[in-house]
Image (tube, rainbow, N blue to C red):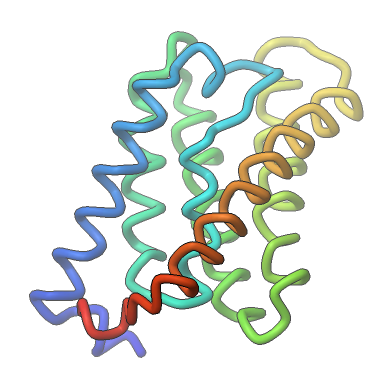
Length: 161
């Protein structure tokens, strides 16, 4: 799989996903950052179910988006981006079981981003984790709608890369 990710087409697909993730997060900044957040761009975390090239794109896109956070900290940049990377890898690994695959972003971001926000903003841990997970669940629901639309239009994403 890793060899396939290094082709020119695959790198371009990853770059497009990174750009879309970062732009959508920045465009919707009021709901993308903070202890109560819903990053609509996190809907893309389900793309690894059908497009493994989304994994590096999601990581880079999240990294770029976190650089523009109004309360940017090194911890949010590192751990927030790592949460999205782990979620994307988990989504890919569990792609044959869509419900479990979709749980990966919710759990990874709820635990990791919730902890970072709790520590850096001095917020209650369990509540902050739950708020982040709830926002992530909403984004994942949008991701399911996106995948359903892709399947209905019979777009073969594997042919794009």
